[in-house]
Amino acid sequence: MRMISVVFVLSNFLVVHGIRLHVGMSPDDIRVNEETIMDGEYPEEVLVNADGDADGNSEEGPPRMHPWGNYMAQVANDLYRADQCGKCGGPTVQVSGGDKRAVSKKLMNAPFSVTMKGDHCSATCDADAGRHVGDNGHNTETKNMGDVFPHYHVVKNLFNTHLYPHTQDQAGLAQLREDLKDTLVVHLRAGDVMAGNTRVGGSDYNPAPCKYVTSEIERSGLKKALLVTSDSSHPCISYIKDKTNVEVQHKAQTEAEDVRFMMSATNIVLSTSSTFGLAAMMMFPGKHEFIAMPTYMGKHCCDTSFFESRLNEMCEISQKANIYEIPAPVKEQITKDFIQEDANFVGTVVHKCK
Image 1 (cartoon, rainbow, N blue to C red):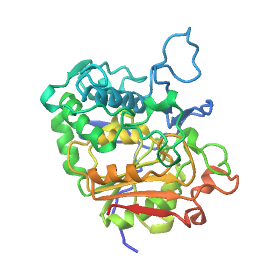
Image 2 (image 1 turned 45 degrees about the horizontal axis):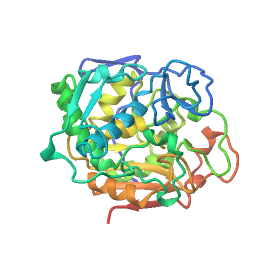
Image 3 (image 1 turned 135 degrees about the vertical axis):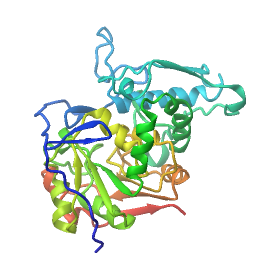
C-alpha cells in the first residue's frame, strides 16, 4: 500500500492565493424533487429542456436560471454548433454568464460573445451535436439533451480557445495550476445525492463507492490529494483515512472557488454524472495527466452509463484516463453505507486507453 503524504485541514478558515476557505461546513437540510440534485450548499444538476426551460416548469412561468454545470453544458452545445460555421446554427454565441448563482461572472468577464472564424470551423454539420443519442443504450430524453456535453475532447478545445481567455485572475490560476500539478484533486459530490437509500438497479446520480477514489489515489502514486466537497462529514473522507492511512486535505468553499481548484487540476477524479465536474475539468487549459470518471452498469441518463465513445474522447484528453463501470446496486441500502462497503465495488470494470 502506498503511503501518501497529505495535509488534513482542521482550522475553520484557510486562505490560499487570496481565497478564503471555510472548512467544516455542513450542508443545509434541503428537500428537493428527484430532478434537482444538490451538492452541499449549491444546486449541482437540474435536467433542463433543450429550449432552455427547466424540466417541469410551467411554460407560462418565468424561465429558470440553470445551475453552473447545466449552464456550461448549454454553452458547450452552442459553441459546438457555432463551430460548424452556420451549417448547424449561427457562428456567434452569446455567453451571458447567467447561471443561477452567477458563478460564470465570478470566473469570467461575462457577458461576452464568441464568433467563429471560417478558417477554423468544422467542415460539416454533426447532426446529433456530438451527443451520442442511442449510443450503448443511452436513454437520455431528447428534451434533456442540452444538458449532455458534446464530444469531451472537442469541448475542452472550444473552452480553452474561446472561454479561458475571458477568465479572471489568470496569474492566480497559473499559480494554482503549479501548486496542484503533483496533487490528485477529487470531486466528492455531496448534499442530496447522499440522502436516502440506493435503488435496485441504481439511479442517474448514485455516488460511486469510496474505493473508487482510493483506487485512483493508489494508481496515481501522487503524494498529495485534495478533496473538493461541500460536506466535511462526507463518508469517503473517513473511509480514506481508515482504509489507506492517508492524511486528507479537504476544502469546503463556495461554488466558484470549487471550480477554480478543479479547473486548475492536472490530475482529477470526477464524480458520477456531474456536469459541474466535467465543465470544470474541460476549462483546464493545459495537458491533463490522470483523469477518472465513474459510471454504472445498465442504462442510465446522461453520463452515468459507460460508452466506448466517451472513453475514446477522454483518451484524446489524456492517455491516462480511466472510466470505471461499477455494478449497479442489487438491493436497497442507505446511500452512506453503500459507498463505504468494498463489496459494492467488486466486479467493477476499469476501462483504460488503448
